[in-house]
Length: 255
Image (tube, rainbow, N blue to C red):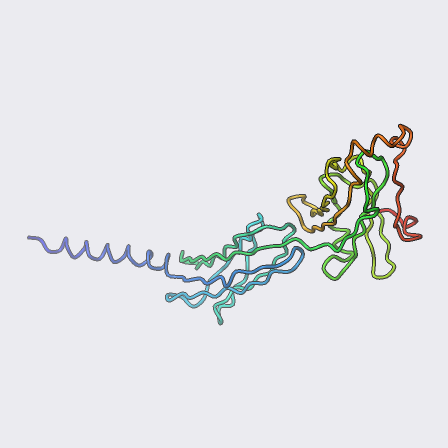
């Protein structure tokens, strides 16, 4: 038997085993799952361990919303730090990848739940005839969570799917955003005595809701019964006039 062939075989197997170990040797810990609001900065610090190499690593973070960022690696502390801001609410799988110049890699995933900013909003008037062509106004308070910058950035507002006819901004008393809707485009059900209306604000990309608020309005009586008491002129011009808008606010410059 020629034993030299077996010696060559063993050497070849060892040579193939080393790159395999390098390719799977990096262990990554992306960190704990997080819950934030839209426009709030998400900060992660992933740690990794490479038993084969102490330098020449690179990293990338895929945020789950089509954004992918290459990141510098802190070789001394074996960490990868990254930040991101989500435009729309949802749950995102964030993938952290660490690679070595010789082909080693490791990956881990954490979940980020993004909740829409809660709008502090009121609707006036609160009693609505669904067949009226009058104007109803949504007042949104500009708060720390939803200030002027976000109000301008998330400029696509809808109420029950309808877009506002006008948008005003009043900077008195901390600031109020006013959205004006024609009642006829909101889609109120005349058979309901009370209904909840929701305003959604979407980001520039229009991918999803960034902020949302709700308020309840009343529809007086059964739609058919009340309608019989109104003349055709009243129904055409809007039986319920707009009320409850603070003086001077309608004079503010439109966006």
